[in-house]
Image 1 (cartoon, rainbow, N blue to C red):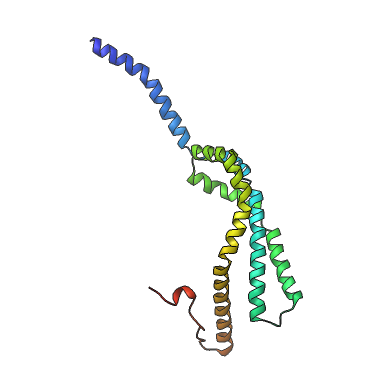
Image 2 (spheres, rainbow, N blue to C red):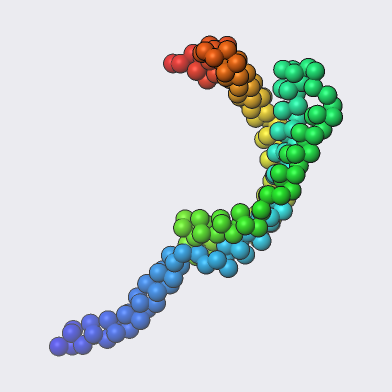
Length: 188
């Protein structure tokens, strides 16, 4: 009887503690709220980072495209290239960034819970997180420069395929591609 009474007392004392832990665990595992994701985006400077990244991408694409087009179409004028650049800049300027970020909130909520987002916010508010945010534009730019040669090869392949298709359409028959894409030349 004493043992049963002691067990009941211990059970009575430990149940609220156990329930509190379950409640905290369940609350922490709940999907992140829209407000949390918006706060995360703010702390991560997502809007600013996205603008910088898009500007950098446009610059790289303009440079790469201009080089490829000049090689393939030497008769193209500087005015025509400038017009192409203006079009890509307009596309960037008209990009619905706010709507895109709003659309990303449910995606983040699907994959991250409240604890995850709180930890991420804490990280991005830390000195290391702030350093990463500050250095990310330079890291991205340098990474794009490093990957540029790979992208350039792919642009060359795509341009060649477009030219082959145009020739095929003009001839009314099947044009043979000049060469397979680099990643398919030596399958192993």
